[in-house]
Length: 403
Image 1 (cartoon, helix red, strand yellow):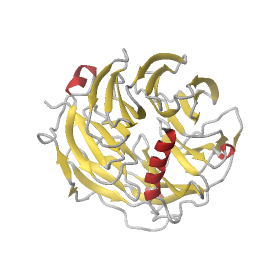
Image 2 (cartoon, one colour; image 1 turned 90 degrees about the vertical axis):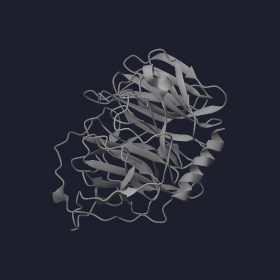
Image 3 (cartoon, one colour; image 1 turned 180 degrees about the vertical axis):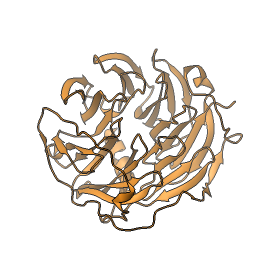
Image 4 (cartoon, helix red, strand yellow; image 1 turned 45 degrees about the vertical axis):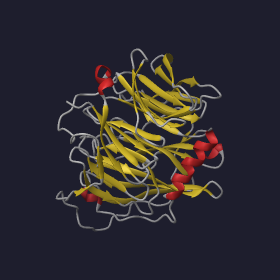
């Protein structure tokens, strides 16, 4: 099963791979005001490094204006037009959630809301499309140098957008780079760094002061977690770990969860200094595929290749609930609603459905059907009224409770 998933993912990434890595357009850094920022410290072997192969080089360019002209999207509407205000998606309303609209386009590799909730950025490989979801219009498209975008992330204050690109092949090995845009009008600042390794995940700390990227190479000893203070955008340190696959910060900034291999999740404390608290074990058939923190409580949800979803109390390491999907579904994606009392899971392999779960009881509340391929990503709007799903089938679907 894992080989099938891996080949599907590699083939999709291969479509949007880079032919070369070259700096993109830049704007004067004087247009961006950077805050003073502390850098995370740790007690292990955090070694300062300067592995970047390219840096942002300012050069004068016209400043983008806010007068962007949206263009219509090719949307397949389901039912009546999208209302301006919808009921929040919570356990009590989960059974009434249905499809609102769908956008057919290129395969979706990742997406993220702008912090104000007005715009959804979608990585399609060669482009990053900025959609106004309520009006269902394309506000703007960003064109990363060389394309190949596989991950995107906004800083919590909306000042930065970072895209991770990947190119190469399994035979020749992968490489990647990080590119940066400055908000609110997303001025391109060029390539932050290029690596002779793939970038498997990126994340901002909740206060926006620290950016983290995980790098993976042909050998486990090549894998590492890099830290970047966002006041300078230079690597402050590189932490060597094995199989750096996924990294997520808890919303309160107290914990860092890292999936260093498919069979373990390490929980680190970020208070005062880096300290390893404990490991969350998995099974041989239950490899970790995705994980996400609850926005309200110290709960970590993990999704696994055997169709299991586990909810963990991060403060103690205790297992709260273990939910299992029927059949041969793989848990490909997870998302909490803003209240943290409902969890959405997206499936792949033998099933392409979305399941809505009650966090307190672990009970399955509702199943959403519509995608014809794996649900690669899920995300709730900041107001909790819309659930967005993205799939390898090239469809972005909007789900909600109609009045």
